[in-house]
Image 1 (cartoon, rainbow, N blue to C red):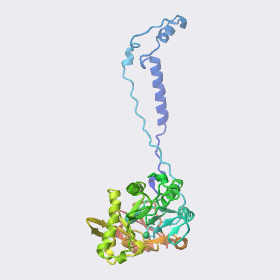
Image 2: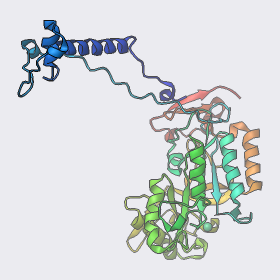
Image 3: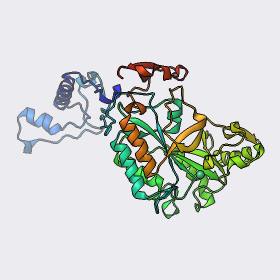
Image 4: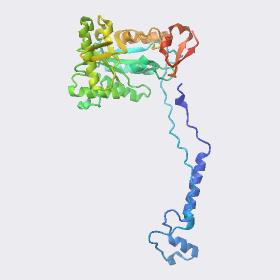
Length: 392
Ligand SMILES: [Zn+2]
């Protein structure tokens, strides 16, 4: 459980009452003395005290305001500023959890989507099914995280939650398109639009996803002149952009030089569009590695270099925890988001709960089942400490 979530700002008992009393007393003193701002009613002062009926009071006007009585020169008593309490953060209901004990050596599903909308197919998910996928994730304690946080192990989720990484290949207009061509106003039936809508309705379910784009025309038929701003917008919204090569090349068919060219050209499109953005990963078109495998993640062409932390495959199982000795981000498996594959892997996660990454709610510790000690990659811990979990 996150410590900050439930902490309440503590009020000093009675401090509010003392503060109120001070204000009242000072207000009375000021009114009685007529010192407030030199606008004391002379009529009140003289008429009442002299016991004369009000009608007979001679109004005295002081040019420049009433003279201040000597006692007015006395410095006003200093009132200690009350401590201003920060508004209490309302502990948000994190929504349904897995209900499972923590296990941060469990697997993480990296979901692979292609087209969204239209008829269901091998490379296409209907709108209804995509929405249903999000509902399943929510109801079963899965929460989207960035690929960056998964790779680095900086997964900050409430206790009992399982991270999931959403990826969308091919840079399609069903992922991102603008209503009335207005950049920043995403169409509601796109992957981005639906993710934002779902996230808004389900606090704690952040709209994170990686969009693997091809150069030179991602999100076609988006006008070319909108591409840079659109990529910038994605990053500003917390989405990530990955490389899917120039014209969706099959890297297995290319020479080393050609491999580096098609990767570098997409790298350049992204970084020219979003200065300072570091592209972190490449999704292999068709899942095919180049003959020289290293060139999938590192290379240089025409002065454009790339150096990625992860290379994503097209299949075919949940990915290891970043703290597992089996973690191999340069061959990162994904699960195709089709009904069959999802049913299969969600069932596997349900029936074999140890398989599933479950957060302990503390990003500074790594919860490891005692029986899995030999699967822990101690080098991946960094400054985190291990929290051993008893059990099977
Ligand atoms: Zn593709």
